[in-house]
Amino acid sequence: YAFDPVSIAAPLTLLQAVNLNGVEALAWSPDGSYLAVGQATGANDLSLYRVDTGATAPNILVFLEAESGNFVRDIAWSPYGCYVAVVE
Image 1 (cartoon, rainbow, N blue to C red):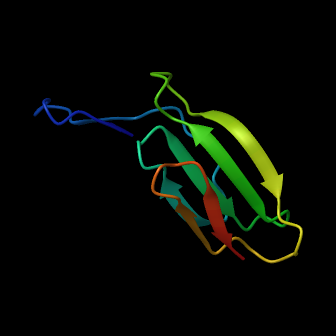
Image 2 (cartoon, rainbow, N blue to C red; image 1 turned 90 degrees about the vertical axis):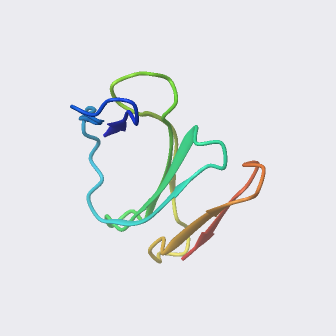
């Protein structure tokens, strides 16, 4: 959803859904431009989405498969958004 704090009648607007089955962790970048998503879908995925483009759906930038075979349990961005830490 997109949130508009000015609109009293309809503060939330549904955006196009993204398949986020098996989500274990979510983390916004410090500037709010990116969303890191950790999924437990069998491939142990980590995806990075760009969400500040004004599009109706987030743009996927990076899709990685965890090498250890564990699920992504937590995600944290560095203070300036240059690094993403993942706990498996």
